[in-house]
Image (cartoon, rainbow over all chains, first blue to last red; front, side, top):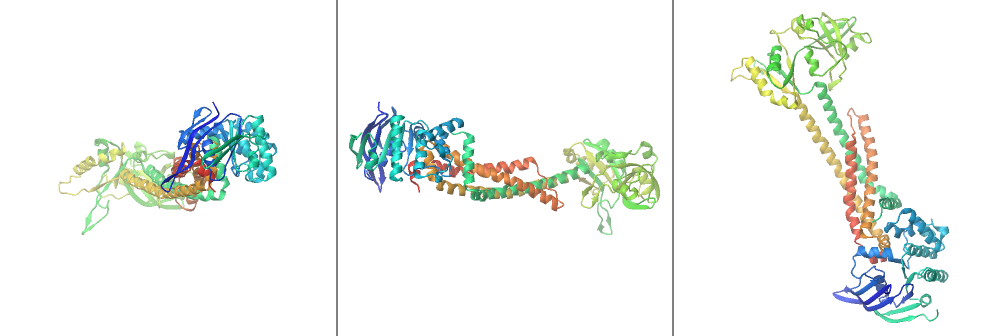
Length: 230
Length: 409
């Protein structure tokens, strides 16, 4: 069975007495170890799809199997548990806790999985080393560059051993050089560490790094292609 | 669920991040706890003062004094009409169940002289039961002997104030003093009791046998006369229960017909003391509850700031939820923060309260007494207030939707 299996996912929001349908029946399979880019213009529903895939939101109808388990009807607390165990997030705005060192930010997911303190420390240090930040473990986010902050966020996403990493416009706030570095890091995570990476972006240049590109237009899958360049 | 140590370290970090605001938030709790401690200490001090007075007067005490007399239409005060005899006391002690002991008292006042020194003091004619009822030891010397009482011996036991005024550093034992001109041999000195009330020095007294007072020192209007009989009941309850039978016995002994008023007054000191104690207790509770209102107001302050804090930190809550915090984890985080805030406030309040109680004791004649219970009470009350008022903001935080929280600017 595929790692992610969506069947006929619909999502609508009530708006002025009507239901505004954002996703109009998405059916999709993503295997373990894939590097997928989800593309689409703004308003296409790619963020909504991302939220459902990331277990931040539940679909109005349809079924979603994550790692073989149905997740479409779980309670918010059960979804939190799934996110903690299976999913790592990397956001456009980094979303690190301010006034908190890089190390402590990376430890955070393990705080909520109740990992013992010494193990948290060891694994957080290793994750920061993996993203090349061993020199800056005790820096606060405001003492780090954008690229470095995004590396901390990536370390936080991989530290709990989550098989899937969701990256929502991870390079949106970075310049070209830093974007390049971050994308190379994602490739490394995908190829060397076998993590499944799902990337949401609107930039062709960034989507190029993925093996498979899914285009969403108007709440439906417009195209789903293997990336031929690779 | 996350472990307690981590929860507290997260809370402390959040509190430290906004030091000034945290202090101002806790200020209500600080003032509340300090006020409760000082108020309770004052009430407690008043109660202890009364209890000590009660102890020094003797426990389960009932006094019987001669009744009022009427002279030319004017009613005189208690004791103005001498009616009581020492034998009345002995009869009560013998016949009334529940009365342990009765001591006769014949009061007088006069000048006492030793060498060049002289001093005006109270003279009490009584017997050894007086000291037993008051549970009063001699610091040295001896009590009255059988012979002293039988032969109206001219012996005296002195209070410490009299000893100081007459003898200074000289040992008074065996010395002869003159009481209203009559020579007395000093046989003992009472231990010091201090004041029993404003201006009432219990040590400014000398004690002589009742028989001596009656026959040689005080002019009495009929044989065996006393001013007062001091009774000790077996229990506090007996001080109430025995009153009717004492009254009946005395009326019979004084041959009072049915339509005649009592010629004596029974005063239940225990009852009076208990009433005073109850009123100070009520005062303590009143002061404490007024002060705890400020604690409550402090709690509202905490709720206010916690609500602001939840709004300000919406994004942080979103991040925590996205990476796996359950609603309980978020609730616990803010609840712990409110609890820690109020406990820190409580701790500072305890310190200020203790200092305040010390200042009150130091600058007034009044003694504010702090007890462990009266410290723990407001401190734990502060904790409860923190939890109570922290609950709503914490609950509100836990209801946030992670998607909206993450988008919050």
